[in-house]
Image (cartoon, rainbow, N blue to C red; front, top):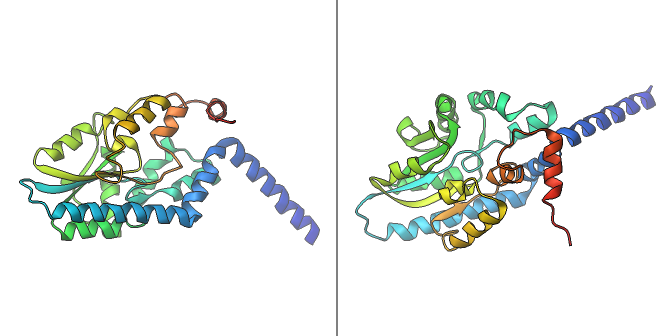
Length: 256
């Protein structure tokens, strides 16, 4: 009986691995890295340590406008890797199930984010959370941020997507009566629209143009799970068949 039980477990594991490999091959290692690697935590702490240094430097300068920090939410303030893990294990999808995840309001904080933003709040700096979560997600987003103790969590400081996925109009709205000390995000489009809807080569070129800003006004967090970089590999959209995605991933690998 014991041997039969072990065989059943092995067979189930084989089928589970086969399902993961076929449907979520690209996501598996990325999610494991974010959830289990100390390196991920170190990089997140490093990003927020640099952000604090830059903020302290700016606080020594006399400003005519009120200071502000513009910060993204997902994988910058909120860690959604548990949703990604569920996607891998149960086969749920971003488009069908992310709404439910947001309403649960159980995302954990990205390491260093809570401490830094509370410090900025204590220093009298306004915090604006600019996210491409849909505007219908306001209630769940507020609930999650409040549960974790993030500062300035009110609708006027959470600017979600309404008519356009471009964050530039929302950044400009903040800049009307604030000096934006820092932009913090995990995606290049959290900083400038120049990074939107570009090829791999064009994105590289744009990074070269702004290379002096990274670590100064632009603070970037690691996110190997998804983002504009991933959509670029697929030709600008995730809404393509799984086999086509896999083909494009291999096409973009560079060997010697």
